[in-house]
Image (cartoon, rainbow, N blue to C red; front, side):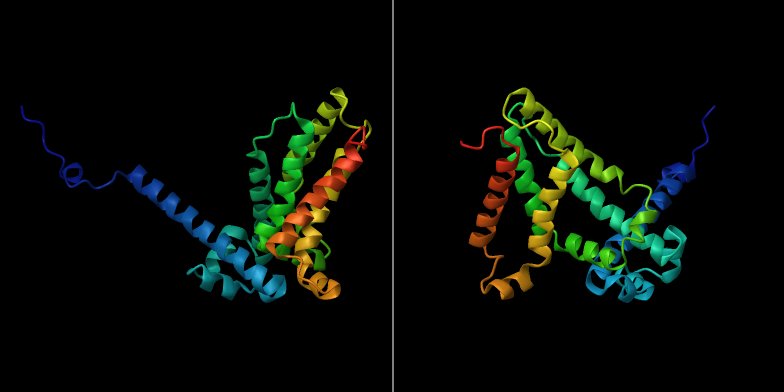
Length: 230
């Protein structure tokens, strides 16, 4: 007996579960479009000036989708902040560092951190915005602390290995050292225009940037090395 044909299958109409997958992908794409647009809008206009209307327009979406996916403008802003921290954490996690060469690895980490702020000005701008609000939004994040864990832990491992090899002074606080490195990158980028005017010369030219990067590396090495004579 001949098996009846399935006209739906023959026409290539997706099964219901495939439609569900398609809808899920479309929903995720909409959510990502809103996040990307919000990152740009908040970086340009700040939290107060970055209105829901501006964001939905930039995302080619509608206001209600922001409330649907993020609950509120504040909820969206928190996810934007989490996103910029997550991307830096992912970039740090992808570094190929030889921990058996701790001083060289630490120098590479320093160069990465300092250059990351410079290469991602929206990161600096968004952090400036949140600092103007005294960190009240990021304080509500459940994930923010997770994104500092890898960098501080990595710094700690390099210090520990350096001590084991007789290259690094014992007792250096990894968190404080990472804070010093981050401060060197953040401050130089966030204040590059005013510092340039104050000092009477641009500090963001390629030559000036290269000198600053190596100065930061040298300064940190003088702090951590067991023997600072070499």
